[in-house]
Length: 152
Image 1 (cartoon, rainbow, N blue to C red):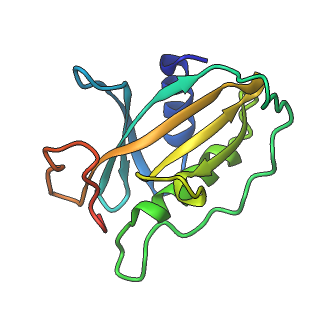
Image 2: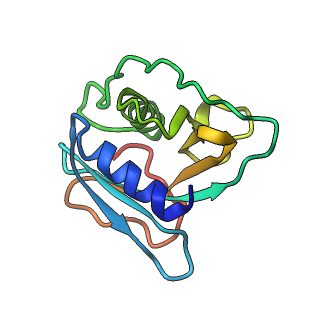
């Protein structure tokens, strides 16, 4: 699957997720295609989308079971990048889309430098959704990509 197909699939799945009020396609000249996800609190998250073909070592074809849907908001009603990763991964897995075999939050890997969500696709391909911007309700995102608010 290429970035456009992943964008279409994720738009369809995430738009049905609880606590997600809108999912819009996002393009920024010189940047990868992506999604703008608006949560019920009004907070927004911009995620880029890139893909990689099968490596020959990861040819999973059976979807993993979906994890339970974790809490998106903390006790103050705010979202953190780690909570967003877990929540979006769970929503994507709960859809049982035949194209997706597993989903993970970047913070679960030891090499994560930025927050985001990774997808393992049928046939061994992968998709990467790094978090590029965040904004709390009524706020504008940072002007610099990959500047993620601690809460939003």
